[in-house]
Image (cartoon, rainbow, N blue to C red; front, side, top):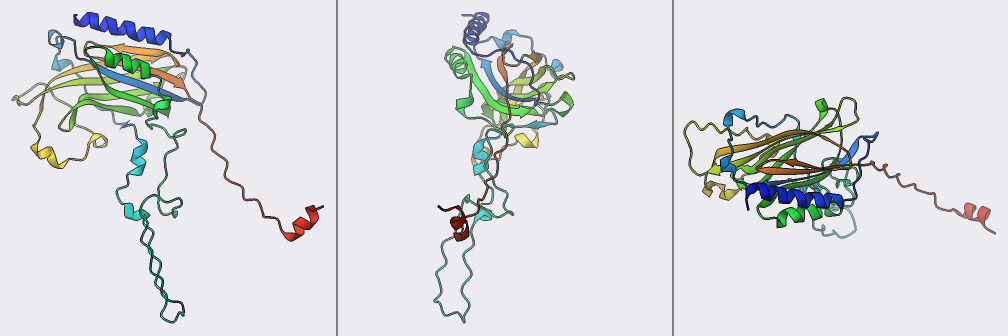
Length: 308
């Protein structure tokens, strides 16, 4: 089975899934909040050696406005848990008659209530932008299963999040770092940027992804150059990284496409080395909950007035 037939077979599977997806084209909403779902996969069965990949035609770079999708678990990982430690009570004065009380053990961890000086709160899944959403909000479950079960394809990134769209000048790109790790680099890197047209009636996707091939041999004056990782994408070094094999990039295959997206429809970006599935759905931001109202308790006078 050749690479072209594999890609055509996968496309048939994806189109069949799309026809059974209850998604309908819709216009851009007034509040410009949307939910996004993206799957990036690699075509492992393709004969990439037969393609003419030139390093002189690459334009791999990370945009200035870039961020990762945040996780709910990020809010549960504090760098200094002592900030949430309840101090023990002060010992009684010497002239007090009551016997001293043994101070309780300090409580460590998130508290039901914290002083104003402690900035800690769980994310609001319904209102927080760029937050990876839970599985119950995913629409690509069947599609991703079909890709995984298709020979020669492997998913390297899947993200579901919500955000407020702006014009291109104010757009924030989503970082894609997926696939197998090679020291601090990843098999697939790049960014996805969504924004509104100047007229505000369409959603535009700018995709700039690249598939990296690595080797353990360093070549002098290699023409393949990766961009420097932004600070937001650097991961903390592990103790065992000093013992890891050093990898060097020896080929970069780029997918760079711009696409007009119809809201509520399924979109497929095809490429010999990779594929990108995208769906944009309108989202209505729920109103903020009303603060609790403290009702005054009944007094004897009130009871006498309202009683029988």
